[in-house]
Image (cartoon, rainbow, N blue to C red):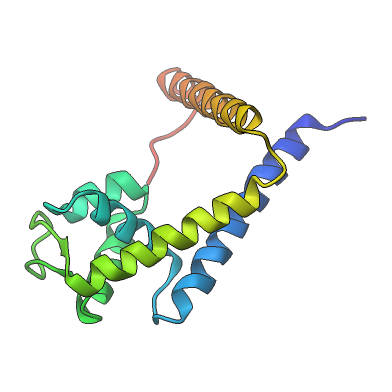
Length: 154
């Protein structure tokens, strides 16, 4: 029997865990963690800066994780902004911009490695299908919440 649920969930979970492991390995040499990758990525894309709240929304991480990550990046000299103010914009320092560029290069390398057997059309189709599945699951989740099947998340 072909268990689509198990194959799908295990593949997605395995990919997610591998991405986290790759991020961790890449950041280890800088004394940073996987959570810092997406912070650097999003701050690089927004030179005017982002608040911790905006980083939470963009990274899908919780407030505590982002607060710790920003504090660690600040302490390491990679970001600047008023410490302790949740709505103060955080921006990259010159060292942070340099590290963010390194992150972008390494991310491009990882994406290339992950899709090396795919043609450009297969890559486009993969992303379209994956985005479609994600959107469908978000709708299904919203419907479950609306129908009262799921309780509020903590």
